[in-house]
Length: 333
Length: 265
Image 1 (cartoon, rainbow over the protein chains, first blue to last red):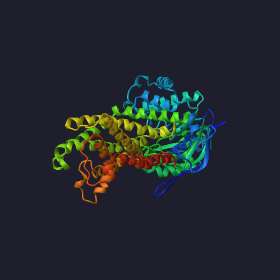
Image 2: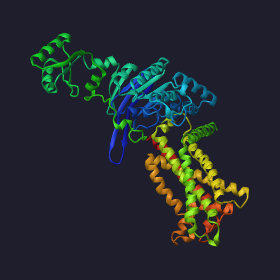
Image 3: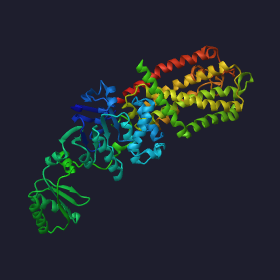
Image 4: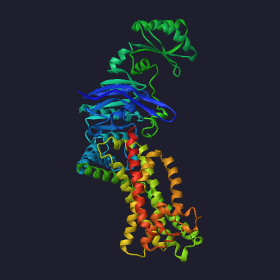
């Protein structure tokens, strides 16, 4: 049984000057009780997809169902069974944590007393009990995210949408968030998670859909995607930047494909052939060419490689102004 | 019926949320009141002496009903900024993803802003008493005047909702609100009797909704209420105010709702 189905979603943002095809025929399905990681760089269409599936935005073409309900015609039914936690902590920073949860509980149509109990439970569960009566303005980034996620859970949703739940969190905050998300998945929630962190998708999702320029360009488990990109890689860090060009030539001879070059850290990555023996050959060739190296390693492909292979450009980790500016609803997303 | 009940409940929950925020950002209310008090002081003690009223009536008694109306007109900006703030912080998105009555965000906002205005009016009326303003009629007339002010505040809140959702950013909303609202209050009978205006500006000032409201409350409370010419604005200010309330509400409530709905486009 599929909890989420999207077929041929198209969304075009028009402004006076130009037209942006944010979604260009996006298809996806999420089976009930599983986690789909929607992986892509900024501007790939992840947030737009989430906004359509959570009834915030109408698609220009294509259709989608969530829990069997049509996102356009049966939006109110969908809202009863979903929870949404956005990229931006959409909680009221002038209310306390407890007041926020009570507010959202009431709007999920819980009776006042029930909303109060639910708020208490969630504050406890998310480690916010001590800060419950403090105004959210005083919360740390990690606490805000947890409160935001707790707000999405006040109505006990069956299907949860998390749009970049850890963007902007420090490593500790991220690990904490992962723990919370894993807990939810154990309880059987269906989860659609967007992320630009490859390891996050690897860590949390059963299946991964790679999205680029408004389309799904690959789909599978993390292992399947890695296999799609081929086997192991050889990674070489040369000592001098001037040697990069020559090193690439040497490596191309020994390798089974094109080289990826990171100028900044003087790192060259090529698909490996012949395992450890291939590595030994590369070392010898480089030595013969009198190229000094700082480091050389054989490693299994990461999702970063998947991304590079599929899209022709590396996954952007650095936030750009676009995706992270405070949301002016509807204009960009 | 259950739909109506839910709309009412959800609207109240949103209104509760908006009002809960007021003491958390005390600067907003404090400066709204200080701004009005500044106008009272400025006009009562600085400009007022140079503005003669026909028959030598008390300028301060003339001024205060105008100040109340002006405060309510300016509160439109507060509503608009509240909406853009919720929009830009993603709160509106959160609300729109919840199974709540669609009308509640807007009805809750307009209701809470009427309550907020009522609170501000109380403070201003007390300040008015200090500078010499009095109600010369009965309790009934007093409350009728207050009711008109709050009814007008409700209409202005709908205009604010539409403005906020149309302009979308706090900065632009701030700018635009005041370029629209200042002339609306100054091109009126709030500070100067319309007799002092050039003949062609008089009808504009006299038919101005803010003037109608001011004249209506002056009339109800027995405060000086001079008019340059006879006609509907002079003779039936209460009726004219009610007409404006209906007309403006009929225009701006649907516009606001339409803006809110089209957020999903």
